[in-house]
Amino acid sequence: MSVTTLDASSSHILDNPAWAALTGPHAHFAERVGHAVRYQQDVAPFHALSDEDDPRAWVDLAVLVGPGGTAAVRGVTEAAEGWEVVRTMHGVQLVDTVLRAEPDPEAVRLGTDDVPEILDLVARTEPGPYLPRTVELGTYLGIRHQGRLIALAGERLHPPGWTEISAVCTDPAHRGRGLATRLVRAVAAGIKERGERPFLHAAATNANAIRLYESIGFTLRRRTVFSLVRHTGAAALEETA
Image (cartoon, rainbow, N blue to C red; front, top):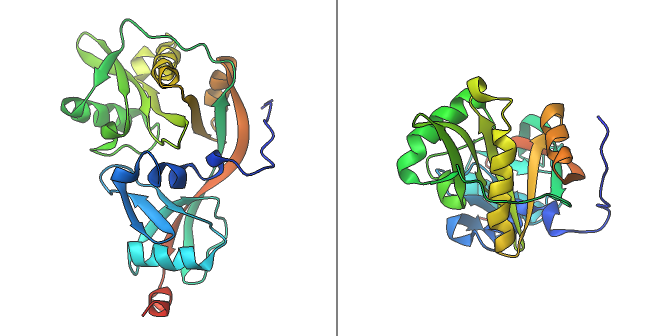
């Protein structure tokens, strides 16, 4: 896979996008304990630490999830004391550099009434986690064929000045028609109208998706890792007693 990488050597708000979102534009979706925060559990499955190298943040996360609780965090490959890594996924983060954003005449705005159809399409295509209230995070657009939802894309993480495009998926029977590209452009048009910049994540192993995103104007900013960690005991909680 040939990619062009932007310089990610200096600190950037996208280095910790969930923290930036949950302590910024998405604060109304947040459940927070000190240096740890998460989305409300029916909105999105993501947690964030102010600094994954700060032991205080892990203590706060332990309070947030409770003994035996799990958390989905970025940038963690080794568990802190009192935690274990359940599984890890390597990913890439791409940002808009030359994307042509434009509305799509067939794209329709999706809302809470469309959630059952959205969840059905997501279950069949597996673009990533999607929960009953994820639709509240931003604008979600879909394309229908004979009344049935066949393609989807929308907005997820929202750090200040940036919005993540997510849940990009197409019914297998309708692939190869450029529907995903059209919806990405349409969602990006709304983001840019607000004066913000689109970005997105993909699994590092999903070469086809990465090639598609690069071909339409996204550039790899950095490689990252996402881990599911589990709190294994009460030791961290005892430190706060």
